[in-house]
Structure formats: structure tokens, C-alpha cells
Length: 102
Image (cartoon, rainbow, N blue to C red; front, side):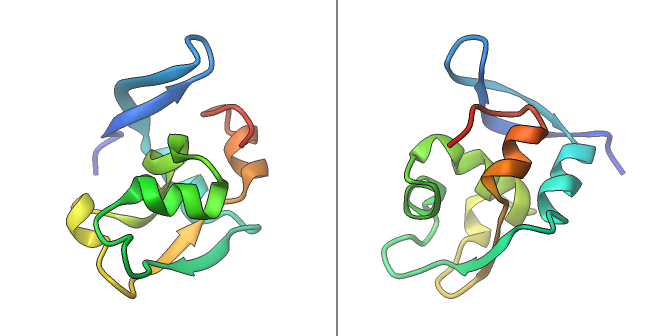
């Protein structure tokens, strides 16, 4: 198992924008196992679009990478119509230090 997985866009508090980088698997696992997560699904018009899923659940497209990290192994092709999703809570995202509060 790899220690890090590549995430195309990570929101950086320091620069206030998305940057390219790696996300430790420990953070990915924490997002997936969040006890406060909600269960969602990919709806019509959101297929293969983590930005639209992020906007729907968080009110911002900045957290598309969180949707990908918590729900995919192959990237965008995993986001098919009706797929059940893990939507990590804002509190967990903030407590992990990987983003500003939504």
C-alpha cells in the first residue's frame, strides 16, 4: 500500500487557493471513516463532476478533491449515476487541517 495518493487539487490555507499535491493515506482513511459523515449519491447532471457534487453538498466547488478522496479509486470514472457517496463533515475536514471551513 502506498503512503500517499496523488490528489489533483488540494485547497491550501496558506495561499487561499487550490494547489497540486499529495494527500497522506491516513487523511483519506479519516475522511472515509468520519463518524459524522452523511451518505449521498451521484444525481443526474453530476456524473463524473466532483465539482458539482461538492457545490451541492458543501455549497462550494473548493471541496471536489474531498469527494474524490473519500469515494474513488479510479478517479472521475467512479462517479456514475446513483453511486453511493461518503460526504465527510465540515468539522472533520477542518479538524484534519486540510482546508478552511466550508
